[in-house]
Length: 326
Image (cartoon, rainbow, N blue to C red):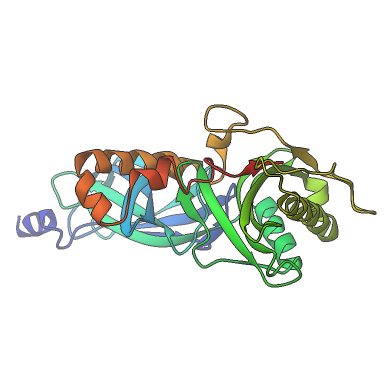
């Protein structure tokens, strides 16, 4: 009787531990491991065993938390005193999740729901790496002398935005290259936004959509050549600005020996175009935008005082209002 009473308080109750084979995995790949369950001092009925993929995102000086996924594992079973159970765990990470960055963190929270007792929990931090195609884009930019900014990987209403600054031949000409990425079956689609010095001593934001195939990504020189061609085009466009504010752009010509990627000069805004809601980080974008919007409506004055303004999310600084398209 005394043991049952203590187990209801969590003393001598069943325990659970999620042992992952590895704490890091690429987006789109499968994370595997085992649950180690150990019975307490009395037999206990387990209602369910589940894992929550918890996402923490920092934005505007605040941390937002949301369940990215709830993964059911088992339900309705009894664990005897001192009994040890091992259950397999497997979960494939969807491609629309953001990758881990200083402002984007993940935790697996294991929940053992015990009937008539204190539930047992376990937490495991995990690190989500870029999918191979995105990693190859990062490598191509690095080959051109670009380095990722410390604040890169922030969540916007349209997905996870990656930011790079030049250290090589583009230094002093290009201020930064930002982009969203959409993983497709045949490759990766990039929405590029390049801040470039203009011929009038100012700065222009030039946008371009670039699709790089998987075959092109597998060749580092080809991938770097295509990105260089796009950046060179933005530099030419910014330097040839007309008084009307519309840039002139010469037709793209493939770099010798490098098959050309596919370019688009169509303005894909929030009202149409490709399915950017499926972009990397698209899940968090929708989640975070909704949470921020609700918070702004509930307490607008406090949010403005904290530096988090509606304009920062829906009209300015989102990468879709202002700038020129090639």
